Image (cartoon, rainbow, N blue to C red; front, side, top):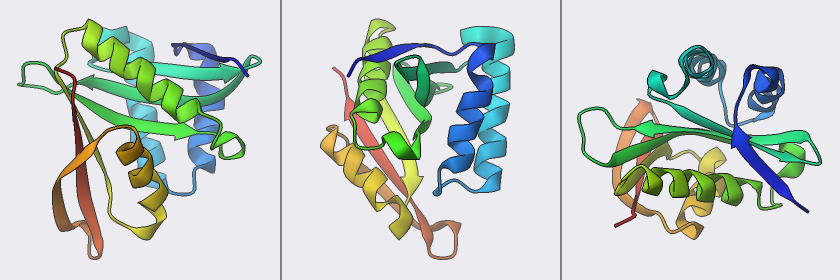
Length: 159
């Protein structure tokens, strides 16, 4: 299986939105916020402060990742959103997307990546994925998003 990764363009938006809406962990506000970032990227490219890559298998869009430099830092980057089509999970697409994002961040002199996620049970596989990818939990804030939904911050140093 060949996973093709490339920058997102306007022709990809509908398929990305379908994946986001099918991602059970995402709430409506998550999808709405993600669409705002996508629109900003599609209108302004990386000048928006975001980089968005998509993954395709046999020309079928199967995943996406959004990342960008953390404002007011030197070399720190955030991975804001990542999603893989539910029927394609476990096939290496998320790893390929995250790996390509890491390569791009290093190319742009990034030294550290942060990823924020939820502490809920629904996000356990997500947290396991980040640990497996070499990210370490550096911070946890209970009840951050809401009561019983804490923030978990992962970090990976690139240099």
